[in-house]
Image (cartoon, rainbow, N blue to C red; front, top):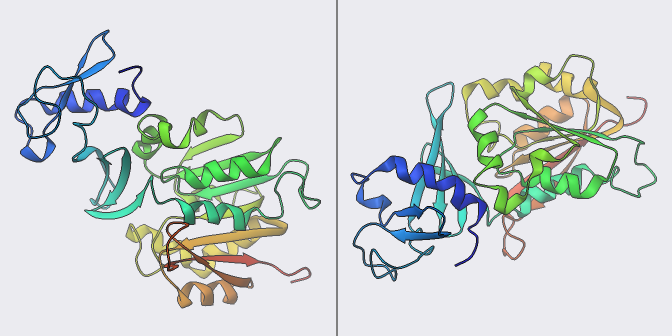
Length: 289
């Protein structure tokens, strides 16, 4: 069958840990046959694998939880395999998927428009800060756009999310964390600001809206105090961009109250989608303000 995908290699220890008593929802599961570069079905099933002796990859086609992490407030962030795609869930609700990445990439494109490679406004060494690693697609698009030299810092609160990007998700977004321009900080975004560092672009993709936060600690990301820190952390002419799941007049209002000029952009969850559910709010500071 040839060499397996990177995520399959990462998945094997997780499948092995489930053991023969794994719940029915996780079967058919598979076993790595050392040195043979094949996967074999270990349980009787109704799939096309035809049982124990067939070489398969397709048997891992059920919706399978491959790993999970507990957030500081006790809620669960989990990674699931759905066919050849991965889905990130928060307490059972889908947050993002590897087959729906259009709006995450658009966040990078709208935020980095002035610092793309070849742009006359690009600084010699642009610096970007991303709040939330997620599945890495915003980071991937930023790296594609801005060229070198550059520095892209990513603030991610959960170590497991970083590990998932280094293992399961590599086949989808590439070895982003090995890029010499990438600096991942295991930290709350709030704690990355206020130390005197400044950025040309700050991109934030953490919560659905200010009223639908992943953890209650994220409420501070929309306060006047935090927005003032963001403003001070932007270089002259810099851009701040927030991704939200739906229109958020509240976010637009608090950004304007913090002294930003704000533009709302419609964002489709998939480039072929008929409707644009999501929004990206781009905030800038007018010269002299």
